[in-house]
Length: 339
Ligand code: SF4
Image 1: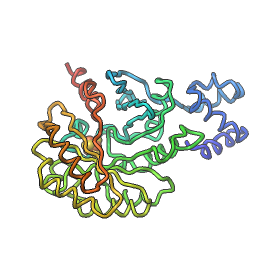
Image 2: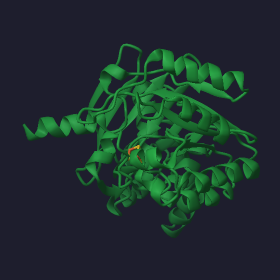
Image 3: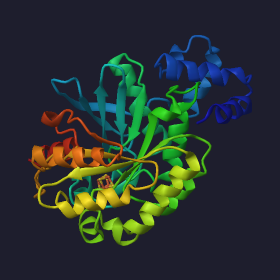
Image 4: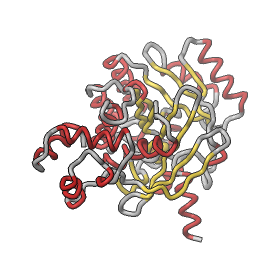
């Protein structure tokens, strides 16, 4: 719930409006989920909340793996017994959580472990927000950045993702600056236009991964519905409307999207608008027959784009040894369950 929704709920239970803010402080600032421990609430109200089935924390940590660089991957059980995963990425000045928005995913990207599992269901607002809140509490740190880049296509679960992001941003919620919140999409064009009209200045990242329709359709089947010309038009429109730079994610896969023609394509697609290319070394997924591009190829892409004044970065590989690409831990644990 947002604070106004909670205020409405507590007043309908015969309590003053400020009780809502008290509850929010316990939940978001102190990490208390047990109503009985919320010591400034009247005892009868504590009981009423529990009896009426209100719940705060909705996730149970069932497994985690930590890499030497501090990247930690969490495997959470949801209230209905399904599982989802999230990744914590600590850096000197930022603490990022990469969160999931769906169990499984219907998009079926060829390079992605989650895509191989198919779609199960959307996550609720609480299940999305609680990934970021729980990790901040467990790490005893203030999460400064959050990215919808875990399992699922966030813009398919549009309403819940947006509401969760607004709760992450709100002062009474997790208090993460809007410019530190990112939604990453595989290219849901109508939702990109919708997002541009929202009253929150988010970052948008688009999984580009190819500059030719034939290759992109092989990697991301959604490209058959929203091909590159339509997608880039939507991205340009988003950048123009929000005045924010759109990130184009580009996973570099050996012999698939790392040739001269692809580099030329990147130069063409990024000309004349507020974009930023993020080159990502491919992180091999068990059962998927792709290999990362050679480091020299990655460097050549980076240097050529830079020479042509394209804003470009290389995503530092984090937590490779703990399989921190989306869906990998979940997939491995499932395999172990089957054995
Ligand atoms: S990369 Fe993202 S959109 Fe594509 S299948 Fe995986 S989770 Fe879904």
